[in-house]
Image (cartoon, rainbow, N blue to C red; front, side):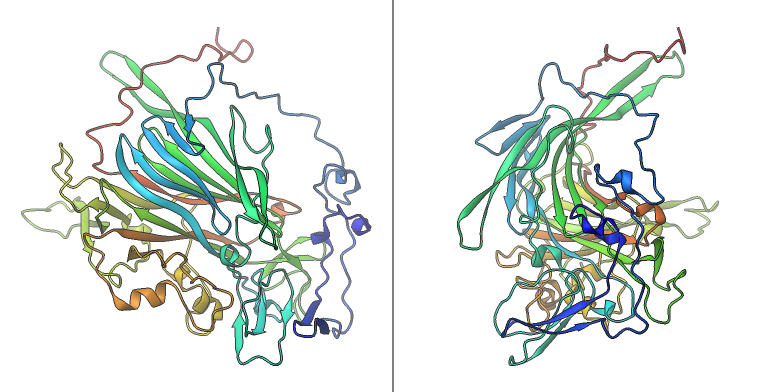
Length: 535
């Protein structure tokens, strides 16, 4: 077995043992799983992705493919189009913003303006919840951080399969789900990125500083990458009457950071676009969390997972993300509305032929009204509009941006754990809804509270919004939930091709027309014909 090698893919050889640790005495109380009869067979086959161990694979390819893709170089002969001043102030194609970094949230953006006008004060990924759906013990405790703990002081817990028992402390906290931002801290999980691998082209890196356990500053080199990408056609039209064509290429400024949280990699991209939009994109890759099938399960057909390698089970789970968006569209005070597109009823005068459908806009005035769930059947989105009299000169309506959910990857459900019984649902209540809106408060920073894995009572959004504060004509903060429901595939092992999820902030009456109408035409003279396809 290649498990003797520290570089081996240990997820191909899962051992379902759970140590029970007493943190007061610093001793192992017992190890759950040893009592299993008969003792399970540990999978022995090699399934590796490490460049030095691919040759050891038992059933996957052992050699690199013969038909290698040809080299593809990304070059910018004139250098990049962005400028960086004052260490973190970025200017690019009518955009201006600051790049920041936080030990808990990782990559953040601040003071975002487009065409000289405010859009967003601060945007960040502020929480994650990753529940696993297998009801067999001990997986009811599994969500990367799964433990039943007696708490007295603030402890830091992390890791898989750890059950911590503190016998002398006053109450039980049963937490069955991971909150990776509040537990691990994405900043501490940040990769140092590699030139020519994680980002291609003309790259600008931002370093970051963290602290060690003694409070000393430590440098994280290349924590954030910034580069430009060509993303195809931005706009095009061919006038059919005379055949005249106008085409403009799309370019995006991409700010990215990569977080390794034990087995998973989370690749977070913020994409600034020439049309005034901002994409918030999350790509998921890395290793599946694996285990053996449980006692009584069909070893070839587990009830809540899939056999992804001989003898290796991977369970269905979710990755739920929460983005905190401190909006400032045009100025500090904004309002928000929900926009649904609905068919109109048959009416002899207004809709006699039944073809009419139109947007229906509802202003959300209070916190309780603004707790919303996405409905793709109605093309639902949310419009954030200026509440201080700034009007679009064409439409005469307030300048606005809209939040478009699920623009990256397919539309996915919110948290699927039981809303009343599951402690995951209690701790991760933010993930049960697609949108929350609160008036800005400097102490309301994290949707599951400041100490999500250790708090005795629920905290965060469900508690703050009980007071039902006004959110109309205020400085408002949007909390948007998005994510992936992941039923593993055989193709996800031994390392997973990226899954994608995300959303977009898109201008809606913010400009007087297409913001990229002033891009001049350009023909790339470095493009070449492949062979003699069309002389």
